[in-house]
Structures are given as C-alpha cells and as structure tokens.
Length: 117
Image (tube, rainbow, N blue to C red; front, side, top):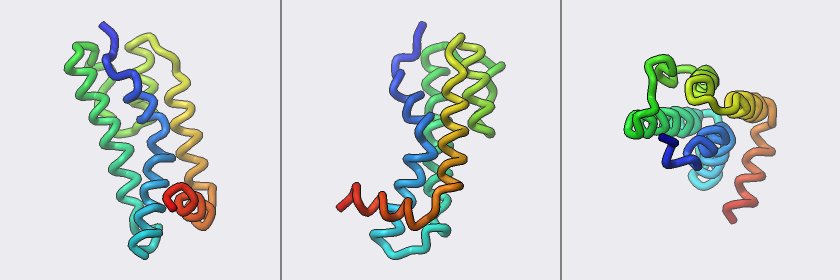
C-alpha cells in the first residue's frame, strides 16, 4: 500500500522554510521579535512530522523501525529506508534547516513582507 498523501512528505521536507516564513509573517504583522517566535517554526516541523507518522499508521505502512519523529532528519531517513524510498528527503530537510539558520533575520522578514503584502 502506498501513502495516500504524497504531498505530505513534500510539505514535511520544506517545513523548515515554511516554519521560518510563518515566523517572519507573524513577526512582521504583530511587531513581535522574530527570535521570540521560534516556537512557530518548531510547531510546524513537528506537527507535520507527527501528522505524517499518523498517516503512515492509518495506511498500515508504519513500522516500529521508523520510530517517532523526535529528530526529524533521522525520522525521514528511517522512513525512507523502511518504505524503500529516496533518502533525498532527509538531505533536503537538513539543508533547508541549515539555510534557515544561516540566512539573516532581516532577509527572511523582508522576503515574508514581499510575499504577504
């Protein structure tokens, strides 16, 4: 049986970017310090990871070998290994996560400003 929501894994892969953009949008619109809203990015990442795990359980593809998504790149790697999928998901998630840490807050907030207004 295949995962009925293939888009979900793609959303999970770009979750570091989505979470950071959400963080910037809320920061821009509410005037709250960007760094104080880090919880939004964390919630987006873990929310999508746990939702993916639940979807796998519903389809019967979840295995105890995958484990829980406490460390998301490891979860994506194990998921790919058990489901015989590409490991690129864990690599892309890791790269996007590192990029969101490297890119300056001002650039992220500017980009969020451009896409929301």
